[in-house]
Image 1 (cartoon, rainbow, N blue to C red):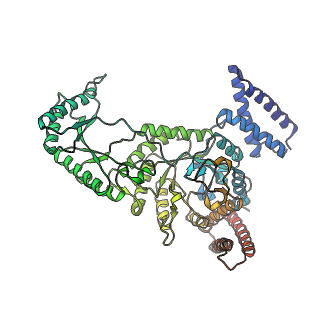
Image 2: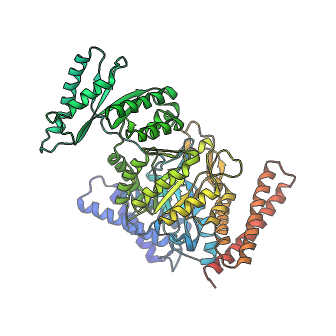
Image 3: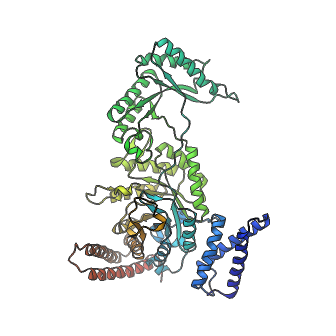
Length: 611
């Protein structure tokens, strides 16, 4: 129970705050008083539950409910946490405290994630510590049938109040970006008919299109490309283009250093579309044009994901790659008609990330799909500039790869694309990134074992990318269908951190919050056993490769492998695919877990030099 003075303080705050909230016509001074009260409530709440204000007593169950209700009302009124936190995930020391662990949930399992994190072998060895030492986070995400989707203010508030002062909090504000495009460049359409008539009309259109960009309000011409598009029946395209290019180079019409013509072509599906694109590049090369823009029918794979990067909306990767090589060989730039507006995209990202930061979270992740490599460069640069005092982590989706002006990086060469993306990230001094999979519903998994056709990267490739990023000064978080046994492998690699869902969760009935989702058959709800075992294996893997006493590392590894075998035996016994009795398998699992826990605690004491 709290002290009498503390109870009286809370009672007074409660009565005045609720009275002010009920008032519909507050004065300016009452508004300020209400905001000050809400900030004081939230600061007091954090101090109490982090233990800083409870030296003379811990709140009873009734007091906890009262405090939580009051703090929830205060946080929803303020729309966030009262004080920006100078500490965020980039400050976590994984080389000393082992890989960070994030568990995804919309808030219903916050207490489970918190208690599992605070009772891990590391915290058993260390004792009470700040959240940045605990290294466990509740990752605020709603898990619908379509995958990970953002949470709202109620979920943010509940999660933050359950975790503040005890463990970290993070979120993913969206796996894909809301793309916005610039207005289309001016187009001059060459109709069928006599060449002389077509040229006369085209020249007038070209002059009219360039004129506002030549005669600007400040007298300083702005650059512009005007695209030429031919009717299907027009044949003499080379000569027509040469004539129009010469006309556009006339200083009475344009400023040649700033103004030029390009070629706009509409393509169809498959090989026919690829052929049309190559022919457009050849035509541009023969006439001296530098730009080819493509428009066309969006292929099925692109519609299924709303949109894909650049030319992948029209052609599959195997067909886009040769087109890009052909364009590069002919010194022609080829791109889609729709040009992404990176300024607007970046500001949309800022608005959602800023909500996460204002709610007190220590990390916000944002997908960079479906941007091209060059578009990522611009968007990431702007976002990082706005969050240099916090941790905003861009996400690379391995199952999607990435497209640049010159290459397509998918499947077999995705690691090369990932490295190019990391170079861009380094250029903007981004401290933390996430490497993940987006199409989890299709079974794609990050780690490939054996002949697994749905696994994307081998352990060797993950270590290669992790080392490459570390040399650039980037900390990498990993996610994407990581199984419980695989957490041990990631721990042994000494990665900065991982995110898991299924490995730490069990299937539960669909709750009322998700009942509107028509294709959600069950929920993934983090369980105490799942989170504890995930953290245990992650820590054991880290210590196996970091404790300096070789014999102790060997003993710990054998214990971890025995525990993994016990998990497998228990799983098989539940499916009746094993001769072992389920009850015995469960006893063996508990025994192996307890043994590994004790050995891991001992290893932490050795590693951290705790007596």
